Image 1 (cartoon, helix red, strand yellow):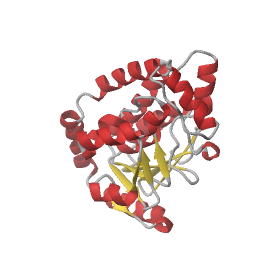
Image 2 (spheres, helix red, strand yellow):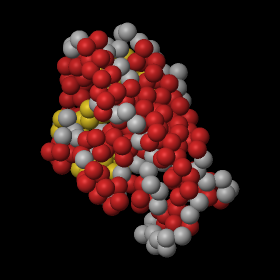
Image 3 (cartoon, rainbow, N blue to C red):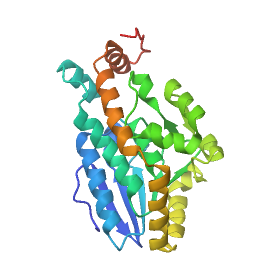
Image 4 (tube, helix red, strand yellow):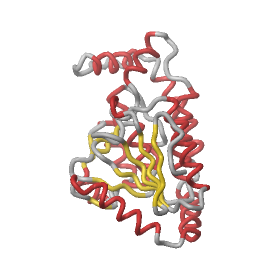
Length: 265
């Protein structure tokens, strides 16, 4: 797969390393439904490609991904269709494709990875960050409980207590602290992020691929056994919260560049 057949992502392969780049920089790589499907398809194809040993996942421009598209949320509210199961399930299946890919997947977190973008980064095996990188479980800021399996992946990395704090407060986890917690595998300088990520990926590409694939299979079987059930519950909760007045207030406040006032309705 030397060139990209996709419209919202770019994919290239060189020296056994694939780079999958989210390509909607004009909206900070916010996800569209098409993006969920394209990322999943690309990861599954790369996972089956014997020429690929490692996948780097990143975003074009200043940010990894802003997560959900707020303008799309506004349209869903105005049209009274709200968030549907199909969309939430697609985000979860995208992240599961990353988690279950037999190749190591490395997130190069340039700038912010928020909401679903954060969930996607957390589904990866490794994260390379800088002091300017931020992981933000921003769902509660939008009066939503979360999707992309992000809460599940986060709990495996930082434990239940810190997961509760990050989910409920929606505050950023910076690169330096993420590295101290073991969430970031490497803390790179901003100007050498790509260089250090490629070097890290090259180290992985030199490792025995079948052994790494079996390690990942065992990790998934025993440490991530209920992710499928989790995304089903996520979908139910996301659909319910998208019909609340608080969700509409969060979207309106975001677009009006003000703080929301939640009423619990």
